Image 1 (cartoon, rainbow, N blue to C red):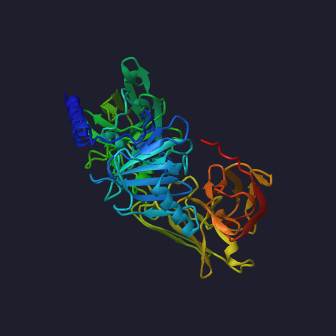
Image 2: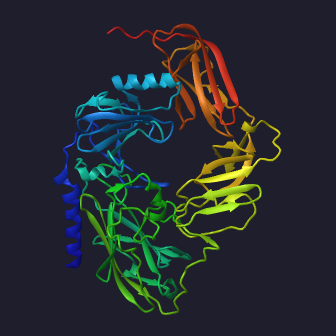
Image 3: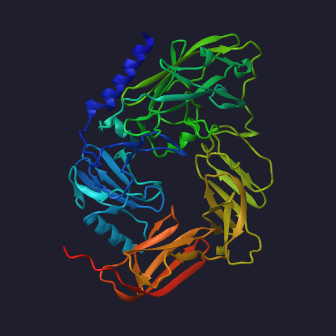
Length: 558
């Protein structure tokens, strides 16, 4: 009866606060059936998925519709990330976001191009007041695409709070997404933790969850834990590899909510209704990073985890136990539609001696709550507090480094290396972390940059200009779109510019294929001079210039 009461409360909260009772009757963002390839809160590398990914039948060019009256408040074009993205503010205090667009339509397209030509760059960001681009519910303003960090054609769609820009789960706003499938529970993992929820190194194991016709179970319905997983103040943490699937597709989506109940006491709950962009990288403390390829959600947290997806603010979810204890454990995973999956088992603590409390010295470990500074003769690292997620053992090595290459870091740290007796122009030097280049500047004898990656620090030089390779070697242009592959294997590409007859022309960059492309201007025919200039981050420049003859086919007469 306790469990039934808990579930009734949880699901009534979903319905009352976020469900159909508060639906805004939004217009679908696409006119095709709404089928999800990814949902809100799904576990992604270094971030939660902050919206819904709608399938677009494997192609680009579907019309995108405003879900409600409002105005286009912002447009951003990025080489990476969201690609071409549109933000629409609505009177109800929400902002809808449409990412990876292939094309803008009408006045919006004209204003964006005007800004691109004014700044002579592809990547731009524009903000509009409510009088510039008003829009009606259902109105078409762009076409779906595959721009930016998208790996296949789809629409990435978000709903945000207009004032705070906190991303909200669109599924709690009543979009008609069919879902009759319960979450899938696949594996369960057990950790030893201290009283603050930090992981005790070397003490973790996992086991497979079996799916049966009656639900989920583990072998013999029992897990036996060594006594030394327990301590005077610490305890045991549980994580579950769980996914969800919705109707219409087999894509693995993310878990919405869960409970952990031990001996009738609810120790932990999560419910992913909204996530701040400032906090999305904290996925690296919510998930189990040691199990690659899995979707482990921890059913516990540490004290430095600020995520607001947890329903029990006063509990960390740590199971406190002692040798010879037997505890009844129940884990429940559920989705927005109310479908749920349940796992019950006995947690048996074996006889033996408990471990000493795990509280490593701040002299030897960098704690999340502390900042970190390492200053050597020729290199320095300066990091803010809340950069690491667990107490990190401080290396005493004198070799220039910042943590290890496998360390996940929340914030960017400042890294510096002294440049002694440079023999090349200063701009030819840059920093790397591991093998990755860092955007570098020179300040009073030091090379400086920022990074949220770990690894060895080195100074590199780049005197090799980027490469440019046209997709076609013909001197005759017969297609509307012309492409060039561009690359730089050292400091990376900084800028690219196209001039046609000495006039700047818009050039778009597709990083997934490392190519730039442009659309041949209307009424351009015959011989014309084309010049492409590509520059890297160390100032090396390559110029490709040729006279090409434009012979586009005459469009058919209507």
